[in-house]
Structure formats: C-alpha cells, structure tokens
Image (cartoon, rainbow, N blue to C red; front, top):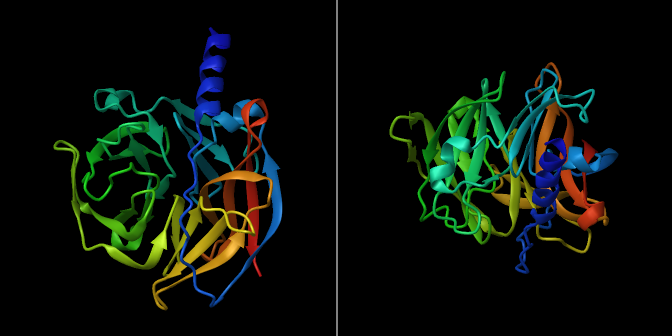
Length: 289
C-alpha cells in the first residue's frame, strides 16, 4: 500500500509543471531595494512532492507548504520534517473537479488556500483550513469572469480583512475579496474594487504583502532568472528586487520570516530545479541589501 501511495505522488509531482508566458513583464527601472540570496535548502524527491506549490510562515516558528494535492505543517528549524499533513485536502470539493492547490496564505489561525479544477478552469474557489490541525473548514466560489484561468495564489491582508488574488496570465489588476462577507453555507464571498497594476504581469505563482507593497513571484524568466517583483502602492511602480539562480526551471510561492518586532528578517522563495526523475524543490533564502 505504501508503494502505491508513493507512486501516486511520484506521478503527480512529475506532471506538475506550468508553462511560463512569452509576454513581457512590465517593471520600472527605478530600484528602491534589492535582495541578496544568503542560503538554500534542497529537498528529497518525496519531500519535494509535498512542497511543490506554496509556502507561508506564521512567524511563531511554523512554516506551511502546499503541493498540488496536500498541505503540510513544518518548523522553521526543520523544513524537511512534516509535523502534520493533510493529503488530498479537497476531498469535499470532488464534485467541483478540484485537483490543484496554489500558493497559500494565513489570516489568524486560518490557512487561505486557492484551489482550481486544472484543465477545465470552471470552478475557481478559495478554501479555509484550521492551521492548528490542517482540517477543512469550508470554501467559497470566486467569479469566473475575473478568475478565468484558475486561482494560482492568495494573499491575505489581515488589517483590512481582505483576500487578494488574480488570474494567472495577462494580469492587469488584482482581485479583492471581502472576508467579512464570507458565507460558507452559500459558498459566497463579495468582490470589492480591484487594484489596478501599472502594467501587465504574466505567470504569477505567488504573492505576499508587506509594508504597503506586494511581492510577486513571476514565472516569466528574464535574462537574470525568474524574478521577484515588488509592486509599491505608494509609487505605483513595479520593480525587480531579486532573482532565482539559473538552475531554477520554475518559480513557485514565497513568504516572509519576520522578527519579534514584525520586521522582515528573511524572504523564502520556492523553486523547481531539473526535470523528471531529478526534479526537486529548493527553498531559496534572501535578505534585503
């Protein structure tokens, strides 16, 4: 039975590959900050299977990962050790054809998980999980007209009690959803006024919000590698602030590690290296210059 279980995950991991767009990511030449890579951690094949999509920190020592088909809870000191897991957490959404989890975020003690029916993209949803036990709480449907190619990521802004997301490609605005309006019985959530971008971004894999700016993992590879973009709400500009190494074949989610004063200490970014049987996930660690 264990062999069968590992084989299923083996197949799912190898098949998890989204193509990057050939369109240009709009970025300003103005640079207000840069980040340098200070370390990396490579996971084994099986550990990579469980960490292939998203990442978020609760800033009290726990790191949560999402893969296509699982959620796991780890500790910042042992990212390779799963303290808790929920495999195929979308069993309750089977009727909708849900088969994919994107980059996750946290608000309070709830994991905000973007989910989609990859291949058809007719049922974009956001699901909620209890962060303590990874247990499923419920889900809401998102408008198909503004999430036409799935739900690749979610970003929570707790002080505003809102969730942000977007389509995957040709992104000219971020979709804003009001958490106060969540109705799990009717699976509904209200949309709010969208946030306009100063240009088009393609292949968004993950987004996190810090200090009035969105940090964006873009799957559009430049000459310097896959970029982390910063969309500053004050300047209304998008800048490239970091790049993953040349070895990376696909960028995934990202998160920040904060200190006791809520200041960012480190940025962690997921990247896929190599292909097929050698396919692995790495966590790249960055600090601001």
